[in-house]
Amino acid sequence: MLDLSNFDLSSIPVKDSMIDAEIVAHVQLQNPLEHALLVLTKTGYNAVPVLDLESKFCGIISKSNIVEEMFGIEQIEVSRLHEKKVEDVMESDVPTITEQDSLEKALHILINYSFVCVVDEEEKMQGIYTRREILKQIRNEFYRQQSK
Ligand code: AMP
Image 1 (cartoon, rainbow, N blue to C red):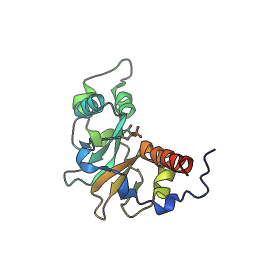
Image 2 (image 1 turned 180 degrees about the vertical axis):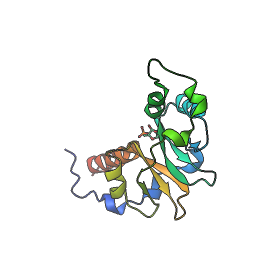
Image 3 (image 1 turned 90 degrees about the horizontal axis):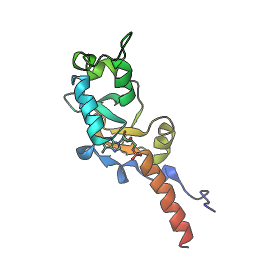
């Protein structure tokens, strides 16, 4: 059985296993929703970070944010995708972590979000930390125990 009693998440630094900003798909505040939907569809992600022109993290946009916006009173109105911008529908009150934080802080945030953005002191995105990474850490601990 997996015994996590000696597994200290607070001692594992975030930067050791985050996905670097260079390979994180993102959209910008001023992009039309049409562009955001294209990025989400092509990457296959449910949600991606929203950045401003200085790469500062501003929030998260998801497919469901966009689909909800498309619903008019009587029908789906695709024209709204040209009219509205990412900043109009994104979720902006989103917690972040820094590279100095431990995985323990990330774990709490990842209960409600599928990823958490890692930012520097100017709020610029350095990368993201995902649920998959937390699960990998736990799996690795499992194999470490088995090999003892
Ligand atoms: P995962 O735990 O790997 O399923 O990832 C959780 C979520 O993190 C995904 O559903 C995406 O919203 C986001 N994500 C993962 N990798 C990337 C990436 N390279 N670029 C943008 N978003 C990502």
